[in-house]
Amino acid sequence: MPDESRESFVRFMRLAGEVLRSDPPAIHRGGLRLVSSSPASLKERVEDLEAREEFQALCNALEGRLNASGFGSHGWKGAVGHWFRRSGLYHRVAAGEALPGSDTLLDGLLAELSPGESTVTYLGLLEHVSFRKPRMEFERYEIVRYSKEELDQVLESQVRADFYPWTIVPTGELAPYWWLVVRQQIQTNRIGPLGGIPVGILSELDIVRRYYTELPPAVESALRELALFYWRSPWATDNDPDWHPCRIPICLRMNAHLATPISGPRADTSVLDTEPFFDPDTREYIGERPHVLFHLSASETEAFEIFVRREGTLLHRALGTAWSKPLVETASNFFAKAFVADGVEQLLWHMTTIEALIGEQGEGGTARLARRLSQAIAASDSERETIRRKFRELYDFRSELVHGRKPEKVVLTRHLFGAREFARNLLRWNLRLLADIHKAADAAGAQADMPDRSEILRLLDLETEGLRKARWLISSLPGTFPRYPGLSE
Image 1 (tube, rainbow, N blue to C red):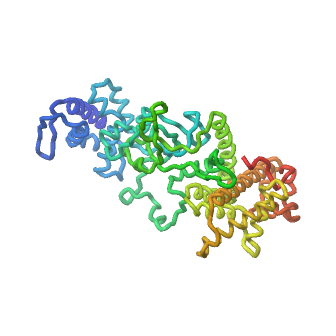
Image 2 (cartoon, one colour; image 1 turned 45 degrees about the vertical axis):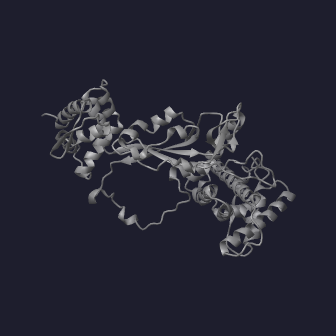
């Protein structure tokens, strides 16, 4: 029995060679045949090619072979057309290149049209930072500096220019930057009933989702780890901390599923901070270059890698375990929200992070927060008193913001930095405690006796009941508990 899809594919490829390599082109519009006196673009030739009956016959044959429904006639034509464009096949045919056999090509097309998995790659531009390594690989993401040629390859620049011109990315302008690269596996072609609406989606339409940043969730997850780094300008002082985080003002998205179009956010380079660049010898103005606040040397880049790997592992394990996830998820999300916030909103969300970690309802809440914070991150009695005093000042700002009162004092950059350091170090303290509890439970076989949030706070308060409840854990905690050494880095 003849394979209709294979025969249709061979016929269409033969026609593609004739149309894409012909000059002058014959462009069909409905029943009209228009002959242009000037060479047509590849996009115009492809549009003419896909208007032919051979292309429709191929789409019908593929639909019949896969026994699929849900795309509809237009959807099948779109999916097949996107595959020919994004696979580079149209470019190779137009250039007269040698191609693999028809069976190999058809297998590739069928695989893309069948249900399966695809990789979505997010590229978040890291602004204000420069590293001494072009690539750093972490467990769940990378930080990469691409050349223009590499960016063109990753972003399919030639395909964009010829077939999706509204998605063109100025790779020349973006090549000087480092990128946070996060890859995520997704399901493809899971078509349900009701004209392609996935089953169960209607029951979720009125659910209000929690969004902490405007970044995709996969990128936001990586940002939670990067935000734990110190990110303080080297020229900062205690009186003028000059707190400026790195930013992700542009986030691009590439779906490796070739049967889908290239789409996603535009790369608006006008939002990037730049500075004038002059010739070092003649002092002649050359142009603009990225404004960099953090020039990490080779040793600083190595220290950055070590820090992010360590803290990221702690955070990932805490978020990946059913017992500890509720204890850290909300706080880490608010911490990421503070990282991308501006001005006094940074202070608000950092204070919210602290409350999410050690806050409880009841009288004397502010004093209790100040005491617990100082117990966790201070190294001496005098430092504990300083932390309690500074925290109360910051909490007054927070209360004025929340309750709409006119501020009695001016919020300074040192207040923003102070709130961030309190939240950052307390979150890191919490991650170490959770890791120690995990480790002790594994050693003692006490998984069924894991402490809840209230019991952890009793332990932090060094109350008798808290210490009694966690007696199996005490030997695994540092001798300085509740303080963990090394939180100041």
